[in-house]
Image 1 (tube, rainbow, N blue to C red):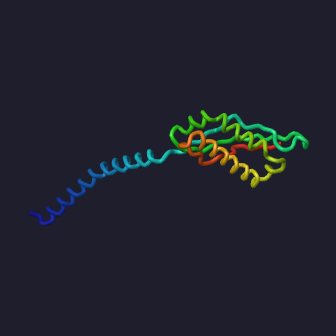
Image 2 (cartoon, rainbow, N blue to C red; image 1 turned 180 degrees about the horizontal axis):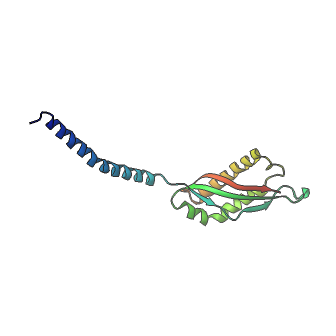
Image 3 (cartoon, rainbow, N blue to C red; image 1 turned 120 degrees about the vertical axis):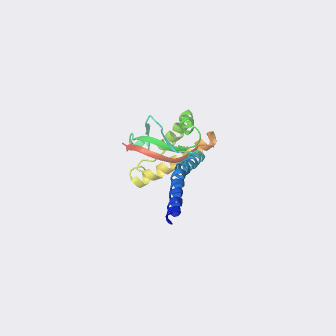
Length: 147
């Protein structure tokens, strides 16, 4: 009998056991990944179409308009459907904010960022009142035109 034979046989059995155990470990990791994904809600983007078009500034200084496309990033159960359901009060509050901007305070990127943050706060407060489980993470201007 070859003295190396038992060692090679043990090595072969260990290798076979590792090869058979790998698919089982991968299945367990996939299951854990799915559980983690379910525990953390996924963010979705919701376009508040149609674009917002409103006058702004003082009428005494002529007619000026803002056109803005707004998209929200939201999380929560059925977030997209609930945002769609409450679109009217969301749009109303955003129109009131945009129409109250004084002339000359939406001209620079820095000024528009201030407006974006105010709009985000308005949307967050509105949704907190209407659907507390929906979290509005961000508000994006996908276009912003002043004239």
